[in-house]
Length: 134
Image 1 (cartoon, rainbow, N blue to C red):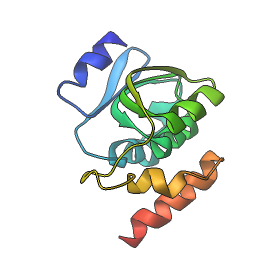
Image 2: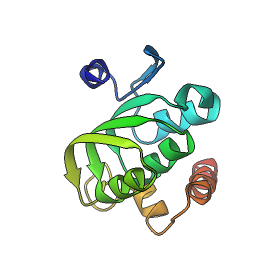
Image 3: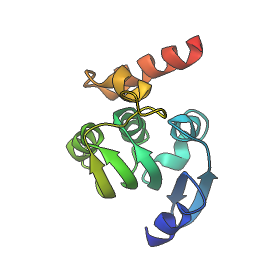
């Protein structure tokens, strides 16, 4: 996990599976996790992931991907709760109440979108509908 955490200096999201770095992405928001889940789901199963910011929406994607462990630079309390509920090993640098939008004027749209959802599959449906509307 140390190598993955160090990689966050240059990337926003890094995935390791069976000791091999499978993905190094540098996109913002939920896009990196969602892209990996939708296009390379097999790379997530039993993997270790490091990500700069994980909110509840990202946590749901990690849960659906059946990852083994995750490290977040910043994680929301909602995300922490669900990762722990699904027995995913979690480490983080900073725990915050909620992920804020990029202008810091309110909650992140993804965090807001799934804040009352309890099931990962339902969250994914809502996230995809939202993204496909844009």
